[in-house]
Amino acid sequence: MNNKVELLAPAGNLDKLKMAIIYGADAVYLGGQIFGLRAQAKNFSIDQMKEGVEFAHKRDKKVYVTLNIIPHNEDLACLPEYVKQLDEINVDAVIVSDPGVIEIVKENAPDMEIHLSTQANATNYAAASFWYKQGVKRIVVARELSLEEIQYINENTPKELEIEAFIHGAMCISYSGRCLLSNYMTNRDANKGECAQACRWKYNLVEEQRPNEYYPIYEDERGTYIFNSKDLCMINSIPDMIKSGITSLKIEGRMKSVYYVAAVVRAYRMVIDNYMKNQDSYKFNSEWFDELKKVSHRDFTKGFYYGKPTGEDQLYTSSSYIRNYDFVGLILDYDEETKIATVEQRNRVLVGDGVEIFGPNKEMFTQKIEKLWDKNDKEIESAPHAQQIYKLKVARPVSKYDIIRKPREE
Image (cartoon, helix red, strand yellow):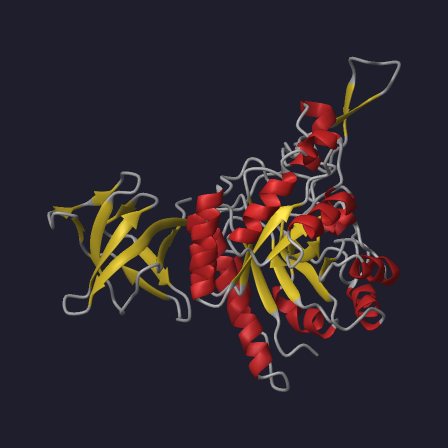
């Protein structure tokens, strides 16, 4: 069994990178402004990437950069120079899906660690061993594998080869994300980072000889979403994943919010740490799962890990998210004498609201807001403005980067 298991978090921008690391990620993965598969994310410039790498390395954490588009000839023109820039700012690894890109990385940054993206569809030990011989240090296995298959790959490949697998987040309807539906429907190429998520739209069936007659494919009166998978959630199966030989446990979500990144990383951090410290006596705490239900999510599935998904792993009624809580504040400062916290507003908060406050490496607590003040210490009834600075008295000591949330109003 691995003595050290990496928790790998998404970083859609610099703020998310910092929050992921502060809340317990061992490494983050991010995209530059070219060559990544999340073109709609606020991706990193080289200068921002450099700042992120320095922030991570000061805390003994790692940064991986995605180069995992499926490139055409014209896409390769500026790749050599870009790889050299990544090497100069000390990126820890690049994530690639194309053998030509691997060659360009090896030629321009010979010491750069290479990880094989899930886009490359590695589904067996022979493929994993082949990629290892090409210089790949880590395989991000296809999402279509079971834990039994992953364990077999681990047992039949060089011990130096690492295995990374997803543990949480959105599932793609197409094989490991290689999809043409978005390109066909909207001219936005999913394999170049511009997926429109056309699979989550609502569809009807049309018979060829009846072009204007639309037949619903429905489970109820609202219709159905025939390609719409539930979200992956493996928080109560972490021991099984570690036992299978997985080296890095990966959270999906570079398009998600700062709150999502912090809360999900924190929940998985608690599970991993508890299991690694107490493997013989480990017991899953349902509160860890409850934490995940307090961020935006769809219903959950375990994907392919315990066998092929069934109809129970599909959402037929809606493609929308479940949102039970609002992120209402990010703590900027705390005065130990007055017990007053200074907060940056993220959603409206009012006197009388019941809120929950949590941070990295500490328990969540609840309290009622008795009073609020603006940044000039004038008493106010609410903080309705985006990123407004407000103050409140807190029931327990808090720290910079702690988060305040409240249940959503029905």
